[in-house]
Length: 124
Image (cartoon, rainbow, N blue to C red; front, side, top):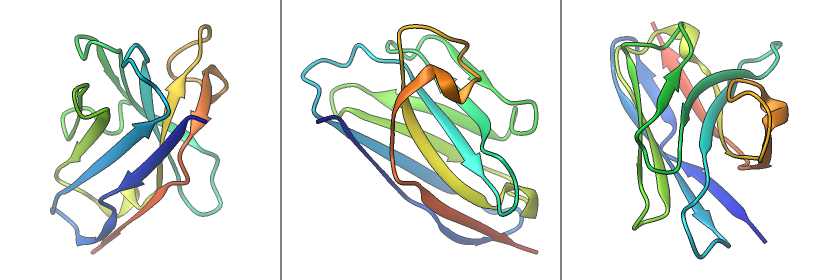
């Protein structure tokens, strides 16, 4: 019933910016914590960012801290990931996910629902 749809991915040159969106449906209230993960070709999925349901607590992987900003608009049931100063190392499929009731925020096992992902490709 819960559905997550990512959008905003695309092709961008190094140094450019993209803004990803994750629209959540199937929930009448916005009491859920969210995370962004990414998976590059040949690599395992890795944690990117986290935001609690109020938007007051955010976390970032060291690789993106200072460049990426996670935010949410609960009135729109949408979570965003603003990505600036992109490099080729950021090329991956980006997934948003709803966190479950337990587990560490940076572990993918802690999330119960996942979107299908959106491709981000950064060219040099």
